[in-house]
Each structure stands twice: as structure tokens, then as C-alpha cells.
Image (cartoon, rainbow, N blue to C red; front, side):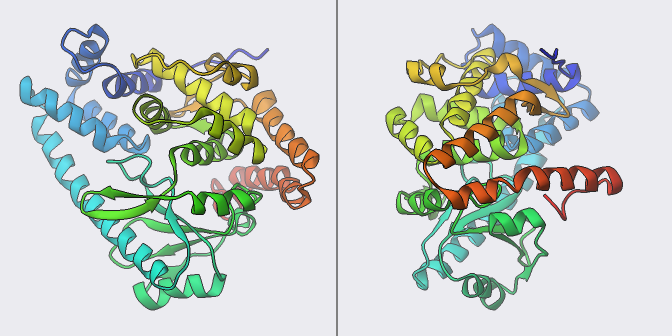
Length: 367
């Protein structure tokens, strides 16, 4: 078995951020106190690098709030920089929410089912783009962005075409808006799941905006599609989001398993939740007791992950490859030939992306 090695610098940063976000915020908590002391002792340049890493991990706002609270109780040289970043992020998030609300309103006015996915899973962080799931006619949905928001439709990559998603640049909004129309998954294989996610969506309030978002079980499924079947790396926000949901929201484990099985991704879901719970425990989060059927279905655990290039990585061989093959086999068992046909293109797409990256340093036109 291949020995996996962590990048020590990035792992130390990830551990510190994970600890301040998940460990009990109690002066008596040695793990939390040591993480705060480590962060505040960083030179200014390294401290700002840590904040940039928090931004990459989609935990910037939550990290800023914890650090600001600690700085108020124990003033330090980084307090002014924290204020600057908080003000800037507050302005950015307000703009994202206002645009998301405007887009959702435009869709609902035309009776197009729509939900905000992924973007608000990180709340009060919002990520690097605005993700929507919608159902309806491609041309009409794309037309909404041009007519109502003056948006420019971005060129689709091969992966975008397979996944049936479109990206738009709206004047006044720095983030791209990504719309998945009628399906989910790297190759658009999850058609029924997409319809079910829309039907199960819930309305939640974010500041002064009420928006439709996916249920907690669907959030975990969508995160699994993204992390275990597409990118093969886990951001810190995935660990924080899922751990927070397991601790504070009533996750229906039986329902989660049923949805995942129907979508042929139950081993991936069980594996991701297992990995997340183990990493969360390392960061000092309260232990979450998972049902035995998670351990029975998980294909590997956190011991087979490693920190490299800023993220918690999932090895492609054999771990990710086995999950992919199981997904194909499960769709075959369910006679979902549409999903099988689309999934069969994923290895070719991944190979093309790898070649493009090696030749040009960029795989965006492919992946």
C-alpha cells in the first residue's frame, strides 16, 4: 500500500484553522488555546497567508469571527487587519446575497423550480461563486440572465456540457453564477436526484434574504458528488459544514442512506462522512456517534487521506477509482443506462484534462 505523506506547513495551517472552528471555545480547552496562540504569534505576512488559506478553504468569515472575538479579549497586533478583512468580506457577502435573491425571484416569477446549492452550505461564508440548481428550458433560463441581469454567458468546458451547467458573469458581481439545469454530478448522471433535491428544498433566512436551499441530507449527498466523485480532495469547509450539521441539525441517517443508495453513491457518502468525523475529532470537535451501517459501507477512512497543496487529498488509486467503479456497477444493477453512458465518459474527460494541464498548465476548457 502506498505510503501517504502530509505537507507539514499546509497541515499545520489546516489543523490550526480546524481547531479554532470545531474545538470548544473555552479558555480551559488546551487544544483551542494553543491554536489561538499559534495563530496570533505568526508574523504579519504569515498571518495574512493564513487568512488567505482560510479563504481558499471557504472558512474565512467563520475564522475571522473567532479570531476577532479572541482579539477583543486579548488585544494583539493583528486586530486592525482582522477588522479590515471583516469589513471587506461583509460587503462581499451582502452583495452575493442580494444578487442570489434577485436571481431566485426572477426564476420563481416564471415558475421555474430553483434552489441555491453549495453556496450557502458554508454560511456565513459563501464560497467563490453562486451555485444554483434549476429545472426548465435551457434557452429560456439562460435568457433570464441576459435580459434581467445583463449577464455574459461564459464558454462551456467539455465537463460543463456533460454536467449540463452554465456559468454567467453578472455586472457588479465578482463571483460567477453557475446554474445546473435538471441534473447533478460530474457527467450530469444524477437526473432524478436533481429533481428530488428541488422538491425537498427548504426556505431559510440569511440576513434579510429568504432563499430556497437543499435539505441537510441533500447537502451531504451533493458534497459527496463534488469531493469523492469529482475533485478527489476535501476542503476544510466540508469538514466544518458536515460536523456542524451532525452536531446541531437533525440529520436523518436512514433517509440519507436511502437517498444515497438510490443515487448509487452510498459508499462515497459513508466514506466522506467517516473521514469528516475522524478529521473533526482530531480538531477537537465533539465525537459524533455514527450508525454502524456507515462503518460497514465506508471503503476507507482518514488514514488513507493526506494534506497536500492545501487540501485533504483522496488518493486516485485505488480509493477514488474503486468508488467510481462501484458507482458504475450500481447504476448497471439499477438499469440506469443513461447514467452509465455518461459515467463511461468520465475517464476520457479526466485524461483529456490531465493532458491539457500538462501542456498548457490549465484544464479549464476540459474539466
